[in-house]
Image (cartoon, rainbow, N blue to C red; front, side):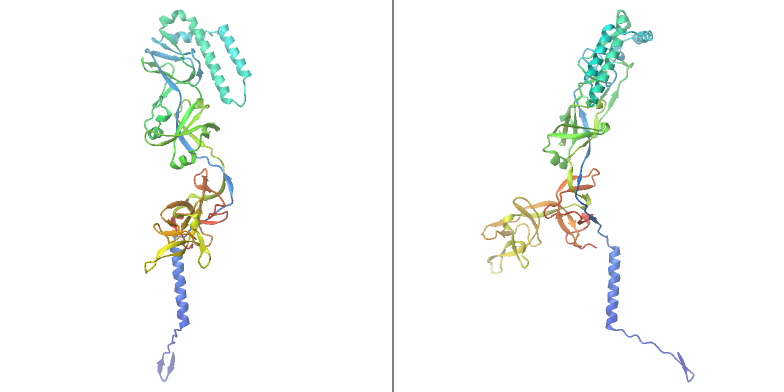
Length: 463
């Protein structure tokens, strides 16, 4: 501002807009737009594949136990007293229990024990023989047999004391109202019954596995029971069968197995049994593992948790979320040829010209996999119903067969490219697949793949 001749004069700076300025302004606004778009866009997370390693998968299952078990019932009302401990093995002819109809026997038995009842020489000799035989057959590797021998010895001693006591009061048996019952067969005595005592492996259904109708009852010595009620249950031996539900994936994985190795978790023991697959009455596909030992560790159990010990798999580990299934056209390998400007793989597609005459044109294709006879191909220029021509002949092939492939989106070049995978196994935490390394048209160690395949499409640029 200047003061001249008493007047105030104001000067305005003139703004000059140039073409260069407009260009820089446009570039600036474009960069701002791209930055905002980038910040607002859901970013694609990548996963770098590690090197090949060896993994062992041990999926966990829950199954139902079935076995050779028999429930025996009381033939009269009275107080029941057991002479074999729950879970111990007894033999045919051993005294299992007595029924005291009026309660007098329990009092008489207590008085005899207070007087230090002695064993007969025959009973002592029998116990000594058992000890000698057990010591001669002692094997540190057969822990189950050791416990079984101990149980048999306990049962034998208890039975000897009871026999001695009953011999002393045999003249008073009738007045005591006592009835003695021996084991009809050898086996493990169990003082528990449940809903599925008579269950067989082929009768197991999804409802049985769910346990929604399962009930059990435990029995104790000294109880008064009515005639017709349960006396005890006998389990014949150590053999038992585990029946469990199979998924479609499981069935495909185990369909050729005749044996299966499993880990019994509470025992931390691995065991191999015969394996078969059956279909239950409700349509559920079931796996059956028949074991010939360790059944005595589960005498009071109906349900069991175990792990299947699969063979180790060597490969590369990828997240399950990275896996996508995609369908491809399949064509005989003889129909692939080289052509185009860059000698790419392709096929001759049969076309009809405007004048109605027939001709062929070369169509580049991408090969994603192969088997002994066919290629799995993809191109937007071919679809089911098109006809391709075999190179060097007049033979044609009508496209129509499509097949799915498992794969991942490789992002090494900055955009999504489908690469097939061959799944070998899965990790123990079920979060990863172990896939074969070096698969044709597949991935290798240190490749970058899209972590969540559901959020992208093929050829999408990774930002």
